[in-house]
Amino acid sequence: MSDGDPPLRLLSLPNTPRRNIIQCMEHIDQFALSLVSNRSKELVKSIDIKCHAINIKVNIIISIRIQFPRDTIECSFDDYQRSVDNPSPNNIKSKVSLGNEGGFVHNKPEYRFEEWLNHALELYHQSELDRVSIFTPLPDMKSFRKTFNKVPTLFILGADDEPKIIEYYRCLRPEKNLIFTVGEFFVHRNENSELLHEIFLHNLDFIYIALMGQLTLDDLLIMNSQKIEIFCQLAINYESIVNRFIKHWLAGSNPRLRYIELECMKCRLPRAEAILNGIKHEIVSEKDPKTLNAFKTSGIGKLKFRGGYNIRRRDGTVATVSFNERNSFVMYIWS
Image 1 (spheres, rainbow, N blue to C red):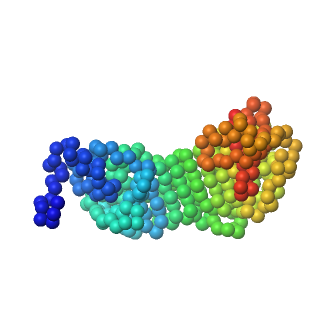
Image 2: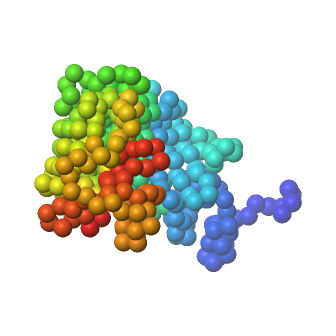
Image 3: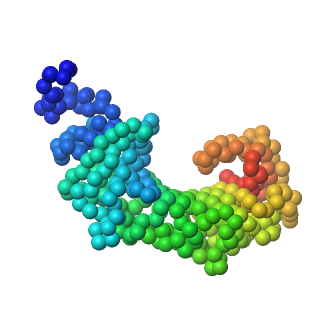
């Protein structure tokens, strides 16, 4: 088509060629078309485009990220929560871009931030968000929470201390996974050492904690998640804590646990003889077929079995204790 040719009247074409043209468009062009009218939105929906995930990222600017296998559409909003009286204004402008490439700015009179989010969820046939990531706190978290129904995964990097973590958790309530950083390096734990226990009690699938000031035995025993990873700065009598934790597990504690990994920055490297002191165990080679197969089929991330020690609970449940490349303590419950 040359510059002098009339524009293609896409919506006037028969259904089959119209769908074929839309299917050949770039993701950002499909998204732009969906914003033209309700009819164009339904047309784009009808070709059943699948995205990998839809996430919200809260940084200096809040954005909706629509992730595909090879690229990501980002809708960012400069004017969201700039006014205390009107945190989510109508006719809000969005800068829509594809990766590092250029894009366009668009606004619709009836669209607030939540309408933009619902538009994306509906367009790509998603029933819910995949993740909310908090890098910078919003002035009104409660108002933000009302913009979506539920979220499986919450990622918190912008919290200064444990009370702020609790505030975000109570407000946003992730259903499956919680990943957060507590404070900064070399910052001691809050005086109320049980503050995080409110989180630990919940039946999450996965909890990851980075820069935890100090790890205690009570922290471990109260956790009710299936998969736990903790990078702490300090643990008094670290080997003793881990040893006692294993003994409690053998007696029936932490019934939902499938995998735990601990790493302590200021502690000496964990020694197997200290951690397994008084615990009946058997050495297993990294080539042991039964244990190796259990690790390969676990479905818990990229586990690499380097050999270790099998322990058995009274009910017959088997766990393998191992130490990975970073000399972390790892325990995987597999039978």
